[in-house]
Length: 283
Length: 273
Image (cartoon, rainbow over the protein chains, first blue to last red):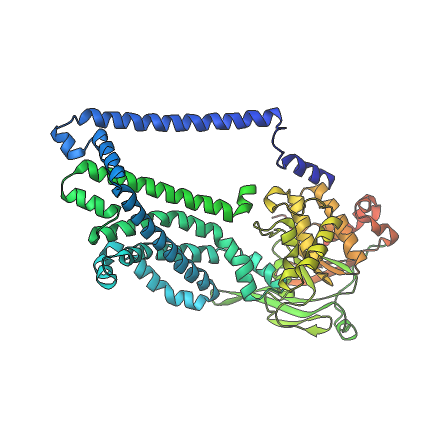
């Protein structure tokens, strides 16, 4: 027993400050590798941008066809100054978040509750597969007709692109729970609901969060597809309008904003995950 | 001291032993494969008396786990009766603790949270559940580790938490399926020692399923040897160490210990193919 405890003491996290030398060395080595990776990434990006800029001199046909980094930057500044960048990003961001939230909430609730009944889940299965195989873009015209051209239709598109994925990942998480663990709960006298709440739901969180990270992107795609069909604002609207007018650098500028929005949203989900799954942080 | 096997064929015992913690009478269990019934347990009878520790050993694949799952109500026997404290129960028997080789700790709960699980399920007030769980963890040498997550504990400590989770519910009977098989030898001996101590002090009964004959002999008052599948009871060995029983570690030094082990080993008919 003492050996056990001693081993665990060595493994236990040490307070800041008194870090032993080998540990500090390992930490420094990790940090150095991290910096090297980041520096290489920045270099690659800079090289690509420089090449792009060099190949598309101002006024050339190539600049018209492909835009140039400087022109894109110009449009970004202009969009930021006239406020359209922030407005469009906020609109699309709002649509995405709402669709992400509603889609994941509904999908996860259905997915988890399917754990309750093998019978119901078997009945539902072909319908889920059928719905999941519909390309969301094919639904856009109907969604616009049903929900109009405003915010709601974009949120609906975003929700639809999320809901099936959320349902499938949470259901997979729920039925993937170790049957020995369920047996243990039963021998401890747990009711089906207690097994669900104390075991199945928390055990599925890892899968649910994997689904969340995946569906951030899907929610954004849904919102932008909705904006493509019919809208008066949002990043999808900006991309569509600039594309129709052959202003290629402005299309790229709006794309850059979209990418940044996607990164911010993904980062946010990662933050929430670490907050909600503390036992993985301590591991 | 003579080391003799006793035949287990004592159907009459169940009648006068109505209040025994566990009586198993002629239980059979099989499973269906391609439309045919494959028998796993042919005919099994055994009893567990109050305060008694019984080990069940058998050759690999003799249906030990099927037996355990049948006993704790996770599987229903095809024929035969299982009576807990004289009563036949459907579903899970009350006051029975169950422990497997896998610790099955919930990774999102701390050692304390895991220990409290059973009390929480039964609706014991949170403060009381916490006090009892902390006390149990302390008794098992885990003082100061209550707030650790399982991922930060060693294998031996995790199994101690699993044991605390079982014992904190104050079970009359413990059913254990090779609970320490995955641990290293020293860790295993120390945990066994602590466990037997707590079981004997609490006047609990224990049924230990194992493939480790030395473990069986060192812990149990009786060792039941099973046959190959379809499983029957082959022999029962009362293990008589008298007062020397107190320490399961020094027990292993005794000459009669190895005598028991040799006899049971010979009885196991493990054929080298």
